Length: 125
Image (cartoon, rainbow, N blue to C red; front, top):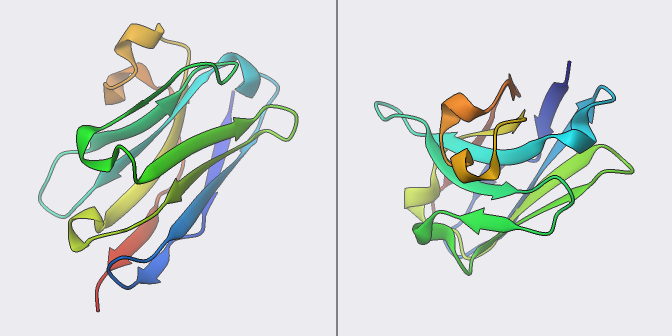
């Protein structure tokens, strides 16, 4: 079992940065692929970024490449999403997730077994 708790959301102006963190409990965190998803009102939950078990591989949605950076620290059971140059289209509830599905399935929400409660990110002037 893995429990996930996000923090760091809030209101930010366009072009600004924001860092989301996710704290995990449970001994199996380090054996899970972890990812970030987001969901805006009236839309489906969409993949944002993922990082492999040892952090050797990362992947990003095209719209956030070059702006967002995912990282993890297995010694501290934490993961983060550094978001730079935010724009209003990034407004959504962001969720951290963890799962043991193969890396090839990393972009599908159904590949993740554990989810945080979500944290709101609002980009607005």
